[in-house]
Image (cartoon, rainbow over all chains, first blue to last red):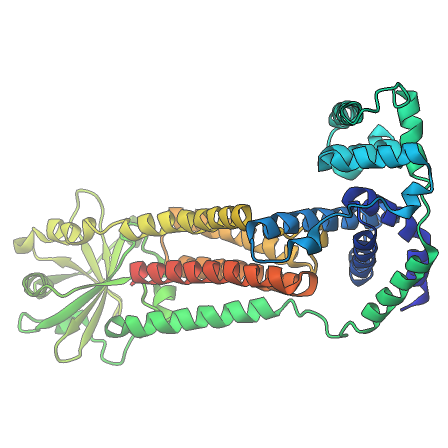
Length: 172
Length: 333
């Protein structure tokens, strides 16, 4: 592999990995999809037109892969003869999350239960800390929609936490 | 809320295993190094489409065998040689009765008489044989006042042919022009029914083909879209993201859309075989390029399971397309 691509991977892969990891909740799968993202990016590098930042471009590829993954999962459910186990999420919380503390494990668990659009909004807005404008640009939707989705996603997350018995105020 | 925000932000501090990061890099390097250097050739669908179109033209030519007429055959004769004893075998006429102009002759020169219709009814042939044997040459004529009406080729049983262009002004008698000698004739007054007979002959056929073809042109893309929607909806085949499309196939798509629109507009106003051929070529090219790029894309980006679903999906689309093309050929024929 050429040196510039290696540098691209070293400098951007952590961010892409985290985005994918929170979207698919599976360490190994996140690594695989990160690899796939960079593979596609390198193959299609000539199509990159500098209209967006490299990070955004890479993240868009990653997003397509994540959504493809979920579509594939639905296909697997549609075809009962295939090995569903291959496509199930981790049941155990990864060590990387455990290391950040008990509260984070609970939060991570609640995040996993959110529907994908809510989860994506929280990952972009709250975990990665993108602004409303940046999120809207990335998702190719209006800023009003992002704001609306953020409020709903947070409400859904709080509801999950409350239902899980974590209603002591520490997550408010 | 702030606390929840803080905690969510803290999730971003999770550390990715450096070992796995490097392991992924190694796997990525291996994959990149094993990419074949051969590039996807975007001209392939164009060549493929051209081949299909040539096949369609050949098929049409074969199907139209008995109607095949080459421009100005050697057996073309002067209209003055036409007598009442001539037994007509058939009459060819151009289908666009109101718009005969130099283009009709260009169409003839192309040797593709897709638009040529025939009169083979024995009674009509003998009637016309009678009409054309009572011609009177017009010596002085103002060409600017003539309004072209129709082109005819009369073919006798003995192989002789007469090429005629008919001019008709409303309320006036028709004028015939012998294309071989460039002389003008008028029908003898005794056969005053000529105009009515002649117009009645093919009035019922007018606009039938454009009508069917325009319906087909609407059905083909609509049906394709519907199938695409249903199949994608039912089987959860991953759609091909615009972001990841490549090879500048959008240039082909753009050209296709523009030319297709022009051809449809042109066809709506002026039914001409060349328009149908252009449309057929464009449709073929559009559909084949779509198949080609989709197939290349899924082969490179999806696993075998998804590829199998795509194969089925594309095969159904190709079969439907071929069926529609066959129907189009039947209608043209």
